Amino acid sequence: MNKIDECLRAFWISKLGVDRLDRLQGGSTDQSPQEKGLSIMGQLREQPQRFYDLMLEGFDGYFHQSVYARTFGKKSMAGPLAELPIGKSQGDVEWWAQFGSTSKGRTRVLAGARKRMEFLSETDKIVRHTVAVPVLAEALHSRLQIRVLTVQSTVTTWSDLLGVRIRRILTPVIDNELADMLFNALKPLSPGLGDMHDLSAQAVELMKDTDRVHTFSGTFGVRLVGRTRHASEGGQLGRRRPLHVVMPQEFEELISAERIRHCEIEIQDEWNGLPRGTAVVLYPMEGKIIFRRMLGVGVINDFLAYLAR
Amino acid sequence: MISWLTWPVEWLARILSKRRKQKIEIALQEAGFVDAKQWHTLNRISKDEASEQLELAVTNGILEKMFLYEGHDSPITFVVPETLLDTHVLLSEIDAFSEEGRKLFVSSNFTRPVYVAPRS
Amino acid sequence: MANDKPIPVDQLPPVVSALSEVVVVEARLRLVRWVFPGSLVLIILGQLKPLAHHFFAPFPWMASGLGLWGCISAAHWAFEGRQSMTKSGKNKWVYIFLVVSVVVLIVVVFAVPNLDDKKLAYTFGVLFVVVLVVVAFAVPKPTDFQYAVFRIVLALAAAGVAAMIPGILEVSISNWLRAGGALAVFVIVFFKSPAALVANPK
Image (cartoon, rainbow over all chains, first blue to last red; front, side):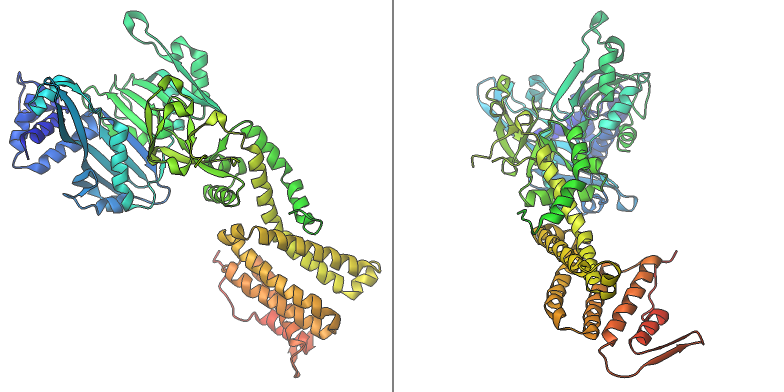
């Protein structure tokens, strides 16, 4: 593994958050998250599986991530996923590690989606590097879930990672694109990849629980001919107020809709594994859930299992 | 072909399906497309039967199959024929003029089949 | 291709009129399943001379004519929808039944004027035997009621076929029934239920 790839892996480890990194190091230090990540990578050099275990841990509770849910009807992808050749690649996806057991109808495969990124250096030269972003495919009975790590980074971060002063990032890393790569890599396993799981009903149920969930914006389909969006703007101290408080009639319209295109919510009270303050954006008709803010450990799997009912 | 010889079944079919047609007209109104899930709900048949009926209607030329892009990165809702799946489309081509020049990748993983009236 | 363009949904024409046609096509396919057998029954009724005396003189012609019209109409729409019918599970057997019945019907229509009562009974017997063979594959696990109906029809059909088979057969059941010839065959098939099958355990 070359130095840049090692730095990248340290970067992914750093996304576990400061608290977890300190626990992994056995104590708090003054280092930056990337430096902590590098130190942990140094410890893991002889244990590559440990890196994969940490990535799985990240997906389970720490990472900002996008989740894509699909339903398979009576079929299951658990068997086909279990037969993936770990250590090999399919197109631009490397299969890193497998977890779970097909006997329980649950298989998880951690992979790296290789994206060719381009950067403009301070000397106006184009710098190219292939970055393997962690993604996770999991089959749970008749559902398939794809999870993609959210890559938000600055020019400074990439300069440190690549060891070259970067002026601009020319290639954005888009979650849909990475999910697409993983879906396409899984297509040879199964004649169809199921359907996008419409989570509109679950989204409405979530939004209706105004004691524990605050909704700040939502877009819903109007019959089959259009869409309407309601969003609240800043209140006191620039903090947005929830829809059910500032526009109750419009909120009623939103929660009466059958097809919800998008909604932005924040958890107010620990709920189905998510701690207070967690911000989630749902695109229910696509079956997409984005965890935007994870404050400490959340048990995402419980929340996803609730949505998948 | 509705000739006097084949008239009985055709006549009975149109009489018996009048109520169902009215129900569909009320439910769908000006909608430009229908999917298998809606057809299954409207007609109280199984999802497999609904898919089968719609696919057979496509085979018989009564409906045309298109794919509805569900990605949130599109400012408007649009459908594409199968030949345009997994290709880039210009947003200005679908009247999203505020997005002049922006291309959108219509991935088959983020579309679902819908059925529209055949285009002449 | 000129039609290979993305289309905003608000530019799509209403799909309701096309869906109305889908509904009519489905109604036709469902009707075919009922109209054809019903028309066959009408044709058979039209051939039964005692009924003509019971109703009025033109009854046989009207019943047979209506029946034939219904059969042709149903067969036409079954042929038009043959792609649909042969793809769909349950409709596939209906389609096979229709095709077989049309062939037999054509033979019968041309042969009937030359048939006496015995040959007529034989012809319809063969027809119903063929129908029941098809039904045996289409309905592998009949309910008790269906099985009872199949038994009666099979017994009648066997009697019809036996009408043409030479020989003497006599059956007595206790002291309440004595039958000979074709009727004896009916009695044996009905009461003895050949090839006992296992109905769905309840």
